[in-house]
Image (tube, rainbow, N blue to C red; front, side, top):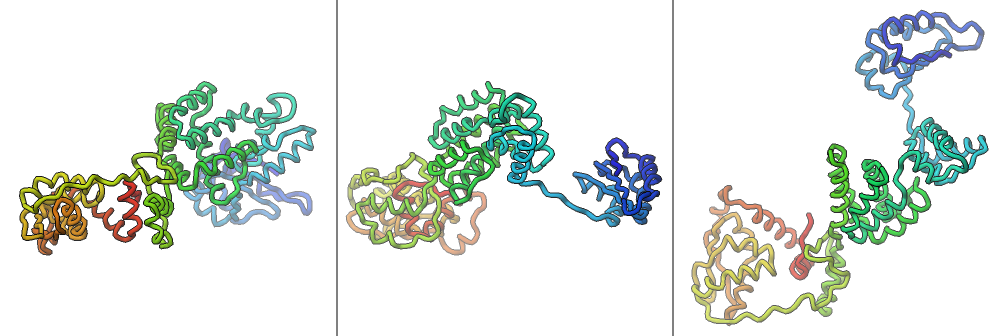
Length: 460
């Protein structure tokens, strides 16, 4: 067997020398001559051309093995060669197989090693058995006595489990003030902040897997205990959002010139991120908070569970009725155009507080006339005409608070012909958002009630 390093012998002359030596078959019967060319992607196009003929018609019992980690480079520089070869792709070795092999080596050498230490070595090897054995040899030569997880971390510069445990605590308890001491501890210990971010992503992924019924592997027993402890305080929807933020910011962190600031901002966003609440739980809590008025509706299936976020506070799971105080009864008076115009700002404010979608549309409306018990309103922006048409009854109820008898609403300037040609320049972001929110709420009465009563923001 002959091994050739193509990184150092990559030219056409080297390939010709190899070709001349390979022309002679093995001298002994039943034996083979094997030429192993390592880093084969480093060979030049001319070197490949020099080998082409002998690869097409190799002598008997002569075998060529070309090893490479970048086969695409061979395809670019020597595409005809590939048709003369058989390709075998080797997969990475799993961590369990690496741990088992490391145990055999440790036993054969008469050494002692903790299982947690072998797991850390296998994880750092990243699927390479040779790398795992090299790391084991490095750790063994570092000190005397059994190979422990702490020694492996010290040699490889890995982050300790208690640091990730502190990270989980800061995020779960939303302890924003604890972010800076945590990063300070990493910096003082000389830790690689990029390694910390990657490890944090793996830990959060393990928490997510545990929440979804999986069993995270490759972690130490201490880390497994931490994952189990924080599985409930960090439910799956929250962890998904945390990982989404990490995916968004990780490229910027790696390219940033101030790694410490980037890591602090990432962990602060995690710690300050609002928690998710299942829509079904909100509706049930709403029914309890209203003194049982919603009991008849609790059995109704509200459809697929959505996610709502309380933008004002960290609402508890139970929502007491005292949180929804009854409004002060408004004064009632005659229905006149002047009075409606005078009350219009208050009506708009009522709508923004109780009917956010209608409140977003009313700035584009003004009262124009009174016809008996009918209030005519002029739509200043035809883009909002369709939404106002659907909110007509809600607007009538708001105006009806201030008059002794029910009223009807008549829209002016909302003809179909006018709506078909809206002026693009008047389209606003608030209007588009209001239209979308109104459509979502119209499809689910339970969602409409929850948004109005709890003042929630819908995350699309």
